[in-house]
Image (cartoon, rainbow, N blue to C red):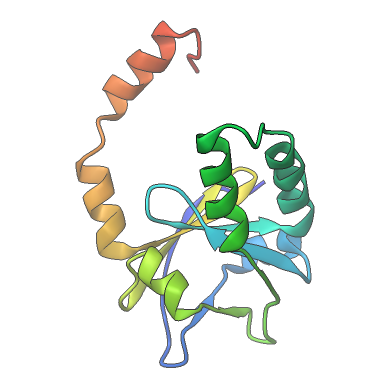
Amino acid sequence: MFIGRYEHSIDAKNRLIVPAKYREELGSSFVITQGLDGCLYILPQKSFEDMAEKLSSLPLTDRDSRSLLRHLVSNATYCELDKQGRVLLTPAQKEHAHIVKDALILGMLSKIEIWGKEAYREYEENSDIEMIEQHLASQGLSI
């Protein structure tokens, strides 16, 4: 399970350090894809395969299903950590997550999110967690 928040800088070769606490659970091969809300997702290979199975069960006749499938799968890449625990981000990945120099790495239970530091600050400023919790509770999804 991935939890916590870490901040790291991208080096000149577009490499990002993956926190040591995440490395063992990620395994030797994992997937990075463009996530939702302007972040990247890092998923262990098994988690990506589970997600792919769910996505493949969506009806292809539904436009939203096709769009989500395209977004998550066509932007996915298999990755490995180097000996220093770094992963290479592509220019497209950096652009999607609005990463200039500093990145936030967030544990999100079954996956990891990578955000540009300023993009995440802006996201947090525009989120009303109490209102979201009330909305979810009204749908029977309280924590």
